Image 1 (cartoon, helix red, strand yellow):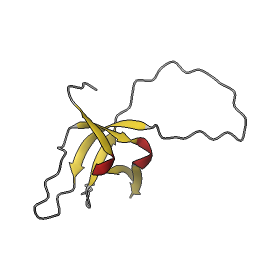
Image 2: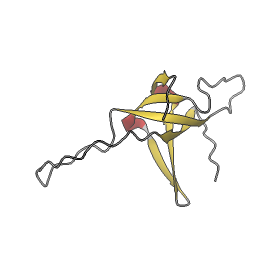
Image 3: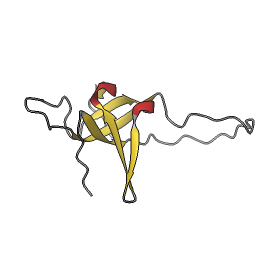
Image 4: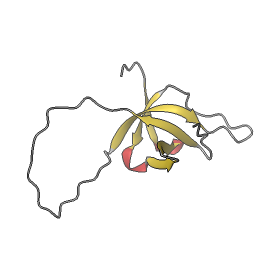
Length: 98
């Protein structure tokens, strides 16, 4: 399936960081941790290009840091797609090997 982002959204892929050794910590039952990190490393898959004269700031294949809590996970016909608005990109990451 192909998703085409609109309204200055970017279609992204979340980059998984290497897992470190797990440590078990006991927490109270009513403790709820945030599932999103403050910043996420992502790979840009597509950007919106619908407006006449609008030039997207990001290219397919670039890596970027985005605000983690602003990433939208959208389920469509059994697949999850991740989208974020361009203004939540805080940096482009160059020279990266994942």
